[in-house]
Image (cartoon, rainbow, N blue to C red; front, side, top):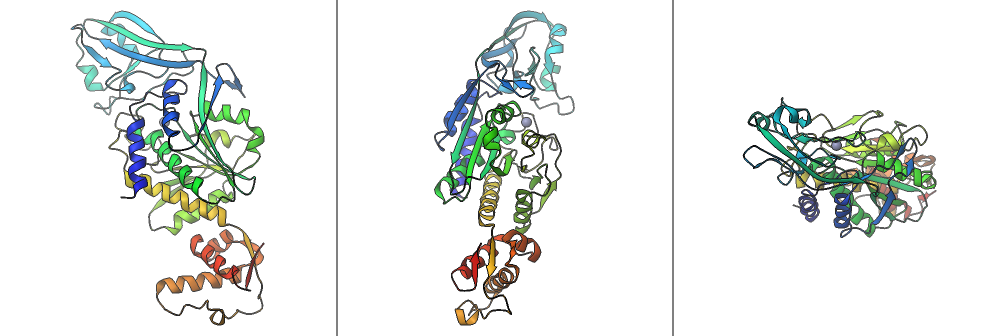
Length: 424
Ligand code: ZN
């Protein structure tokens, strides 16, 4: 197992117990831990700050919550799983019968062993989530309800890491940090983006990379409303969500449909042996729908493994540490690294000896040993030379030839060291 696979999984294990929501100390603690691995600016935006048609909500924090049964035991216990409490539940201290309590209880009758994940960010109410089996076992009688939470003016917290490049054009990579103990839906994205950031920080960068660790929806709206000047510099982007499960990778296209990020992602996915899926854009899903709102129309798609809402573990207690695998995390990270390399490598070249095929042999470029690798190297050089009439980029040539972007890039680098090719 690669070291990054183990490290990403360990980060998920560390973050898993924290009770996160769209605001609050759980997000701050999460960003503090991510900040041990990556230089992160933590930004606090006060409650009530407008963000287009929205505004930053009150900050929610919770210390404890439980439903105490007629026998005095904590029959529904926030300490056992933070999924038991509906996110943004207002403070409560009350006694009531089971029938009075029922409208505040949420279960999944078709998945009777699982706890659902429920939120109520924009309507002030309270609720508990539990398995259907747990509910069925509750006896009649009087119950004590207590939710030791606060919902007051505070701030929305997000993390931002900017890694400057040689060019001002930016690549935006984001994940959401607002889900509590759910391993695939948000922790996998946090782990992969953190390790991608570490990798980016160590390499030469042509573009500037901006990594956002933000609460879903309100986080991207808040960020966009404060960074419209930055948004204008974004030339490629992806949200990263649900990338630790064992399903194959899925690319959801940006609103533009065939932006360079869409073409690069699909080409690099196709260069691998693993199966993958491509979805068209839709104004639903993760924060690509905010970056892809018509007022921005940024080239930002979404990288997932199993798409949200299509797997039975989604938004339930079954999205746990067993549901994500170190190998899947490493595979996603590897894909993203290859995509970054392809984006950075994409440029046009000019063949300086365009009349007839130049002699590779007399320049020491003709492989002296045969075999499959040598054949790929030779074909890549012939494609780069033939395709480089000054109008086609490496990605154009990769799509045209069917050859991997990485092989063409290596060929272009080799040829650029001779009198045959110049970068434009
Ligand atoms: Zn979710």
